[in-house]
Length: 635
Figure 1 (cartoon, rainbow, N blue to C red):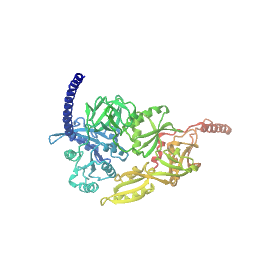
Figure 2: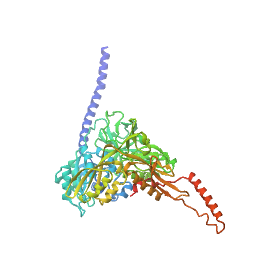
Figure 3: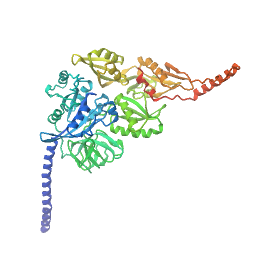
Figure 4: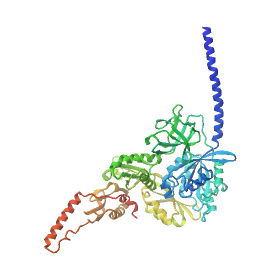
């Protein structure tokens, strides 16, 4: 027994010794790996570019790519990161774009992960996602236009996430640049020293080297544990016809390796990491993506609903305990129906919307049906420009011809029984006899403009039921006006009118402040007594008559004439408040009668009259697509 124990003891020693040696080797290797990792991590910088629309973000990003030699001069073009035709045509950034740059400073190699963000208020959700993936931000301010509303809004968003702000004064080459005054505005806004503001020009390349050095010196390196279980935040995704869904992520802890079995935390789905890599102008495959890095993963995902922006990627074998706290949920502001022109294309439209939602997580939609248009989708957008862009992308990228209904916002309706109904569509509104009260969303609107335009802007806001809450002079000739007004009043043409009356010098930003009770009514448009639900709208009672009359006049211009008379009516319940008539096209049936008895002509006219009456009973009025958005262009 003793001998057996001795043998076992010897065997154990034989087994334990190599394990200890291996463990010692692994520990030593891990220490070297950790020290290399720590050295490498301190040379990573993740930053985004935030600014008001048209302050030169994309042009400055081009210069950064050029100086760091990320893109060679042969492939460089204006708005290099804006890869959509729509972005180039309109000169705006619609999507956030991530790209990795390498830069040599003081004999050390730095990895810079840049995310270029949109500037328009309708794409602020893209900005929030970019900010969640960064440690610092370049705040670009136009030296000729100064600080504008979206600059302030995006800055507050960045400060909420404790990002290090680097102020940059762009467009210094313009003749109208006013650097000293704008520097005062920046100092007042963020409380920095004047010396910290970097003068630059995206067009000439002035100050680009200073910006890169400031990124290295001022923005902190990402923090994270390379040895902890994998935690990576998905901040964007895109659909590829050949590879399936590609998800973009930032690794907060751990390492993701090619061939790993990974799990998406919130959906619980498991996949193999077929390909991972970093984001250059095109994805570059890598064997591993480490803590602090931004990369992409291709794992053969075919269904859009399996990828949620804001989800956490972790390892199946060694999963993390909690998901990363992502960015806030999207809150749609404007609702509209999107319907296929041909009802048979409904399923194809659904697939297109799901693929588009991957690339634009702020798009929200659900199925609905309309008596006039058949089956389609009720979609939520962040604003009117967002809605317009989605419609154009559906037509260009997916070859879908769609009809968009009149946009409106979401209301709360309280019934006499105390029920609360969310009304996204005027047709959802219950019978007036059952309604106790209706509440509509209100916003806090911030307008920054020149002092000479205060009068006309106040007048515009007052006509939109706005209440002036504050008026602050930022400088001697720049003023900030703060209004409280219903969201429903600004979703149509407010922004265009604001730009028009201020000659482009007014900037606009808003955020919701809750719901308030209002005297709202549902106005229907009827064609030959049949209501067209796609043209129904919820409006304030005081404006119903004027809007109804103008809509009827506009439809009379837009609807083609038929062989029968068309009555266009605006109604509130059973009461008709406006009417226009489109006269029937009439063939001269008596043209062939030369002379002869008058009774012959009368007989022909009576026959025509009966035909017209019968045609009116069975005839359909075709409503062209531009009529559905007629309400937007009433002025």
